[in-house]
Length: 311
Image (tube, rainbow, N blue to C red; front, side):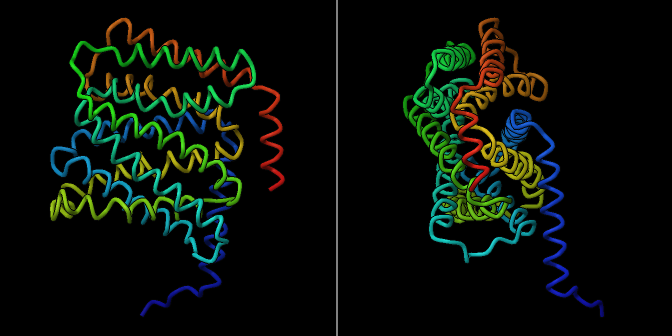
């Protein structure tokens, strides 16, 4: 019979794995982490459109968060012995993730993807606007807002409840950026993220089971769901949490405005979704806004980074 490795050896391996991941993430510039996370989110969303007919939006969310929680828990082995503030932040972040995912996927099921993404961006846009202290910051935020309006341009009548759900998703995403920044400052590795995603999975799983039932366990469903979980949750949220350790929330919020542009390109390349000229203008505008926000950081950005490095 094969012996199990002692607990001390398992702990050492986990520490070495965490250190290797930390070094790898640390070598990537913070804007690159945000862009990489956005790319993963949109590629996962493209795959989710093919899974949604089988299990519905609630089933996709339940599988995505549950599988991601398993992967992150095995990788980071988080405990429940943290202080109340850290556990509270993880629970808040997980709740915001669960509500965001459910409302966004339900919105996409009712309104065009461009319109849903336009409404969702209002959360990061509000952070960029209200956290600004310079005129240039307002310029980049307004340019980003204009871009998503162009991207969301459509002649299709829009469903009011669908728009309301997309707006709720935007509020949750903005809240997650703020809470995630505090969680990233308190937990130096992925344990906080693992706790947050696990809590989000526990919240979303009952609703997903009620809507999809035994279809969630179908092998033809689990295989693509695992890919979606890695692309849409494990990789993006790991990258984003590391980026939030280095960037002020307002800059992170503007950088995530790349999501509609990346989504448009992914939709074109993977799903054959073509864009009109005003929508391509939106792609260019959002790219310019993100570059401007990155290359012209305000004096507050350095202070935020220094404050987090001391905690």
